[in-house]
Length: 136
Length: 102
Image: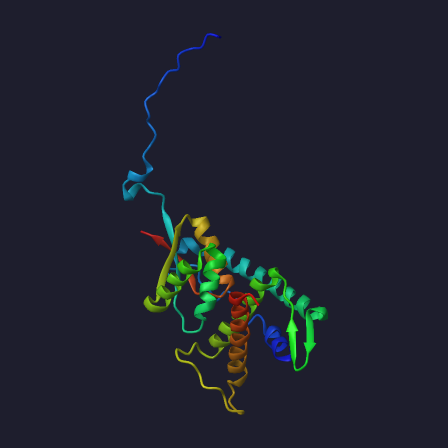
């Protein structure tokens, strides 16, 4: 629970206006690019609100033995996947977009926070997709 | 029985849209997803299913195209629809763009 909270509180990590609408970058697309950036910024605000609402709703988290079970509504799935992947991809961008998988960091590695954020976000994301695919 | 006028039969002059030459077709935009080494394959498949309402098999086909060939053309659409799809894909942090179909 603490690790999931930690990951969710990092959101958003991807820099604003990071994603181009088109690779050709035509001048005629400038206005459309602005609209896209605004729409994505608005989406981030909404997702951030959803994160805060989820974390404040303690009834969604049930302790059982050494584990915690989180209950999600169907409407939570998509924004939660978007948030987790933002932290996953955003941490990768902060690490310089490495083309190969990075080894787990040693304690004094200055890149440790980003590497752990990337690994944890990927782990939670993968668990959520597995749960969706297997209906659990 | 009431009197009825004989219907006038007009020749069928409907345009055959399918046989339009390429140069006369509506300008279209290709929605393309590009490969990156970070997104999970299962995640990309899920996003394609969620955004385009595709069956898993079709979503996996395009995901593998992205993975193996570096990119996949997902749909060809009007400007507005292509923008909509790029926005949806970028909401999920996929590397998606739209390019004019010349």
